[in-house]
Image (tube, rainbow over all chains, first blue to last red; front, side, top):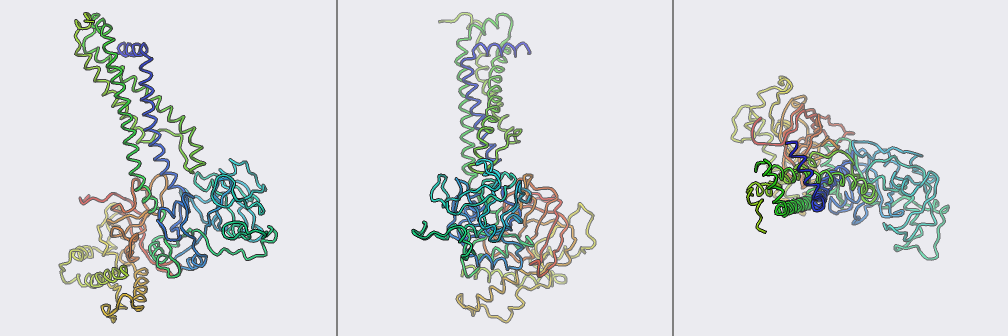
Length: 424
Length: 205
């Protein structure tokens, strides 16, 4: 058996040119299957880790998924703002423990800017109820002294090389390239948050009043011509925000969540919606799940195609190797041995492809991970294969072994005489 | 106004149910839900079985026997009110308040029970779901109207439950606790540190 295996290996090595192509195609199919599975699980995990301890997200009427995606993941846009008076009314509800208003829309070099209150740093939780921690500095002060202070997410600080005390300017709108700058009112970096692996890392945090101040001399969506309010003067104006994008709500007793949700939906003053983050996430997976299954089916098909390639290559090689196999038979190998030889060859090629695919997957995740983190806030883990990845991997190897039985059976049926006296 | 009608309709169905189960102790009832209630009342909560043995209960058991959600609306002739009547709106609002402050059944404090229901996720860690709410009917709370507060159980599984999504049906087993009604705490409610969370199946385990 051992000698048969080494024979198979040497025989395969002898035809390494064509077989390496097969190995490459199996490796690519494996890469596709494994990285798809890795992205699927890690994306779910990243998303479910992004918000914790928040019972409701309150915003203007829209889809629950859209509201959650925008407020928590900064993906998409808001349909409308909500008035600050509604937020304050919510604060007064007896089941509500805390309300953190958030205001989105501006950006800094492609990173979203979040206007909020200092309570955000106190109440916001991610992962397994972990609070936000500052790696350096402190949160912005909620008063006028801290009007132009900002707290950066870890990714923002690292990527742009910002330090405490540095002055940055925000841009109007959510573009990546500098558009209309709020250049006259720079913000000072007061704190840098520790890494969380969530969209918080990509966020520039400022106070709600700060957002208000940089738009003081704006009208109708652009800087008002002839009107310039210097940063020092801004403090003299009424900077209390009139409206915000959404509010995160925490309750005293989580069982009261439906009552509060209902209360928000029934508010007569303003049409609002309150979303349970977990329910909205499940709704999102329900939608994404269809596409995921289609992608998985396609990658499965790709794997089948590359295995078909393996069968074709080995089968085509058979006619060339008639003589070789006949010589083997002549020196005493039974048809069974010939069959085993070819099956082992196929299995070796598949195994090599699968292993190479694993290596490629690691390389791919190592290379694409940082990009995914900055662009989408999704952390890809460079770790041992998950259970479902193992299942996919063993399915590929098993299918490869079964497929290589096809040429093996054909070789089994070739007679000794046929190989020794070729017609051609 | 469709919702309002639905709410009224639900209330009307609920109304005869609460007093009915109270009478059941003496008179056998033809209501299947009430009949099972009667069986379970025979076992006092104090004589709860040793841990590991969970008494099966129904959602009716979570309502105090003497609770009548429509008590203060007795004199009102609902059929005389039109949908656009401001009194109807005021009454619906009041009804909602009554439901949101529905009392818990004191006999259920400390009872080791198992109960099936629909799951609404609250908190998910990497290991699985660590906190969720259990409600008695599908679509509860996501569509309207939500169930009364004594028909919601806040569940904290001992070990994170994996592979569950919102509105999955599960059996939960554990010790039931009533959370006191307190003006600063919001509504009173049930809480369970569930020992076991398993997907629902019709077969008895």
